Amino acid sequence: MTQHSQLTRLGLFDARVPRYTSYPTAPHFAGGGGAAEFTHWVHEIPENATISLYLHVPFCRRLCWFCACRTQGTTTLSPVVAYVETLLAELALLGRNLPKGVTLSRLHWGGGTPTLLPPDQITILAEAIFAILPLAEGAEFSVEIDPNEVDGPRLDALKAAGMNRASIGVQDFDPLIQETIGRTQSYELTKQVADQIRDRGILSLNADILYGLPHQTTERISESVQKLLTLSPDRVALYGYAHVPWMSRRQQMIPSDVMPTPEERLNLFETAEKLFVWDGYRAIGIDHFARPTDGLAIAQATGHLRRNFQGYTDDTAPILIGLGASSISRFPQGFSQNASGTSDYTKAIRAGKFASHRGHAFTSEDRLRGRLIEALMCDFHISRAEILASFDVTPDRLQSLLDATARAFPGMVTLDDQGLTILTQGRPLTRMIARTFDAYDQTKAQHSAAI
Image 1 (cartoon, rainbow, N blue to C red):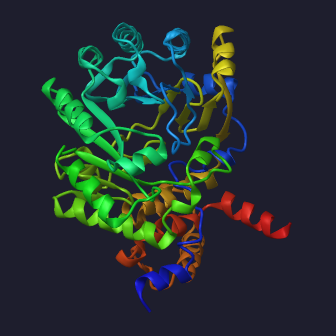
Image 2 (image 1 turned 30 degrees about the horizontal axis):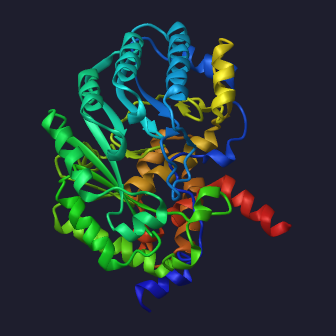
């Protein structure tokens, strides 16, 4: 039996499985994490702790058809400037509730398009953040940059604010694919922006590229990857495009009949993967690649690789606070998400309240299953010794959980005294294997079967 036929038999090409950037995943947030809980959890942050901060800017000049993120289009800067004022108010509110001495290990501005902000707004926002949460030694400040929406003055403002890692969205360089997904961005422009970033002394560069796009072939993705490699990014996220036009209205602009088949998607991923590895990148988890000197590669080698809402990270801070509409915070106690609509978010902040409106308070079972899933996603391995030492679970209970997974994926995992390991041939199934530990997904599946 070929590997592809084994993967077919195990359901790889039919399954829709979460990316597991959190556990439980956002659709299964079961309660808790509202404004009152968020405030309490902020108060419980230890003095002098080091945390992370994510800031969401939901605006785009144009809405790319492939994107399913929570964004909104704008042709003027007035709503962006008004939004910054709300962010400043949210920051001030956070500052009044934070314990003393808290600093940042990571700061990330995402979107949307953070580089829509004018230079003066970039400066004002960064100064407001650091007045409340100064960067710790060795901290990282990263920003998502759209080459179509950035210029020299904006890059100068970001550099002056302390940005030391930039992330460029590429998706694909093929003109036909770009036209089909509503994202026109030439290789020449992308290279120009990458050079401008490095000319300013910002040496850490991330890039995102997609596989599974309409009209994408192995030849086309090979050409796009080789062009991307000329930019020499330090790390690359190779995400699979999820075509869900019934969930994302803008994806209805993309014709479904030119999408690659599931089998072709796997070939596209494997083609890109080989090119990155041949160029000296280390494969990180299921969909990232990094230079050996990059923090992700080091974290993987030292057992400190983690998952968060942006994917893989080398950030080990136990707390991440999300600012802005729809942002999700993670505390040791649980998740808390801000109101998704910009108007609802703004209304709450202007009333002097945190905008948290939903979330999830962790149970001990959540923490156990979340770590089992994260271990597989990051290391392809669950250490029996680590789990028994870190969680209140009996050896028999853990063995039962591992046995069930091993039975479900024969020939794809091994189970021994050390724990459970996903074999190389089973790595395309990693998310499906991780799903065997997802109690919420299993409950949903049982309910669907019952009706």
